[in-house]
Amino acid sequence: MKNFNLQLLLALALLAFFPSCSKDDDTDDNVVITVNDAAELVAASMAIATYGAVSNMNYVSDQIVDILDCNESESETRSDTETSINGEVMVSFTISESYSLACSGGEEEINYIFTADQTTTSNPLDTDHSISGNWIISGAESTSSVLTYNGSYSRGGEWIYNNADDHTDNTTTSFVYKDVKANKDDGVIFEGTSTFALNGTSTVYDPYSYEGDIVFQAGNICVATFATGEQYKIDLNTGDVTPL
Image 1 (spheres, rainbow, N blue to C red):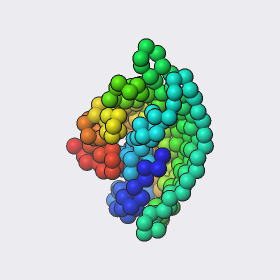
Image 2: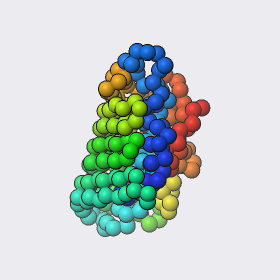
Image 3: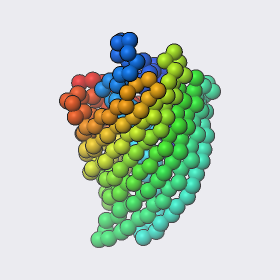
Image 4: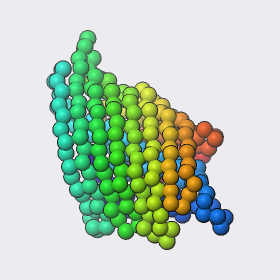
């Protein structure tokens, strides 16, 4: 769970890629965040660099696959704090997790359940999030080169913007992943789908709600399609978002 790219997280915060500066130019402050903003929040809940769902998947691939014997189960609680090299971003988290391995007919399947609390502290942006998920991962047997993930992931809590638009949003983003396939050796996703739903409130925006579908492509790339038709390419390594 320590796949943080803190320098990149700082850069993203400095660029305000979260919806702190894309408010409509209308003088009425009570507007809903744009679809572009929503896409950024979806990406932040998925990317490795921002401790999203794919970071958690990689943890399963890097750690859990190799430590369990058939029909064995484990549980633990861990905490850690990391600070960026320049000292400008600090991330703290506590995670409680349980995992088990079922074996049948030469096939092995992992059941991984987790909850986590994560805070990020920096000059432009602070966060306080609760994270939870449940992965069922097939392909854990040594003869398989691919892991297939099915399950759910949710990330919710405060985004506190410490800039000229000083405000706080409380947003929850939830996913249901179906047959998401990743190479076992490097964790890179190349196939699968997911649904997503984003709901939030804000001290400056009206309540907002977005939903849509995600198609995963080769090379840790996915395309998110909103129910309203807008499409975005998301780099699952960095969280970068490109409108299509």
